[in-house]
Image 1 (cartoon, rainbow, N blue to C red):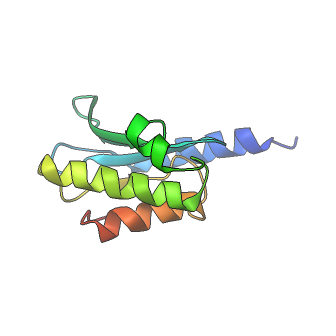
Image 2: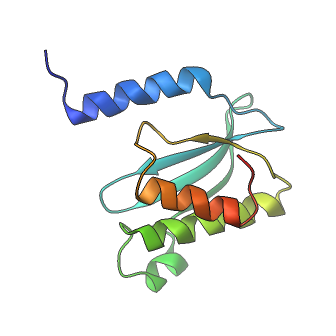
Image 3: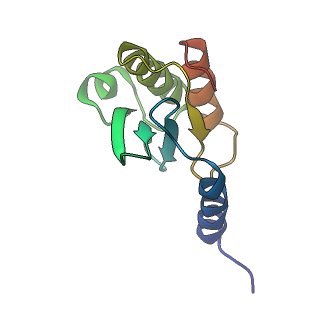
Length: 120
């Protein structure tokens, strides 16, 4: 039986999540990418709490961008989530790509977060 692309992504995400856990010392940087936007959250899985978040649907970022579905938009979200994390005292995170391939917008967000000071 051939699986759909969505089912393949979901199974890849489940496989990743069995290995990647966020703690208070090293939370998880989770990414969700839709066709039109990208979202990033820093999550402490032990307390099940979102510590920091950023996305392309935020009003001030949305007004600066032509589209939320570009690598440039992903870079802006990566920089923003890294700055907010550093303000909270979070320097190290575990990267969770959400079952997506490390390519394109996901890669742009990750590299921008690294350049802004997050370590993963």
